[in-house]
Length: 157
Image 1: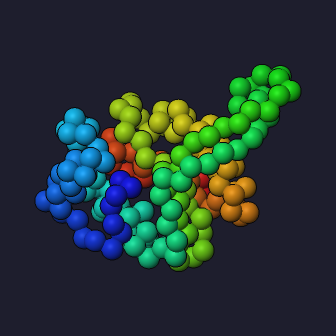
Image 2 (image 1 turned 180 degrees about the horizontal axis):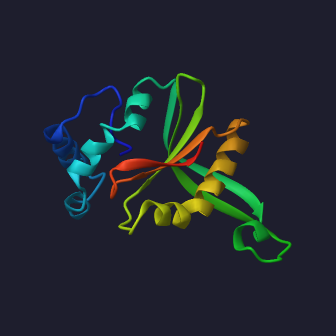
């Protein structure tokens, strides 16, 4: 998803070509390429998030973050130590309305959307906190984009 170009119109042929180029450039292995569902990527390029990204004022993909938090916030235990958390935010962008949108891609096979959201709630809260600290502003919307369901699931509005 990170290698998609927002100003480009994609069809299945273009996505297949993109995947082949990633293998050729050794960005992904041929085995990884075999596990990519081009239809799932095509569906993303037809989503409302994709459409909004085309007009976005700023787009950031695969951004590492580091945040120090009290351990009790992460582990739900009464521990007084702080821990350093590092991670990678898949995507965030600022749309035309100046809203900060956080998106995390998920490929999980789950029974329902609620299960997926619950599974990643804590992770998304960490991403939100890290992004808000880094940019000194609030996150307006958080989405999980599920390739399994083929749509964005809003976690925070």
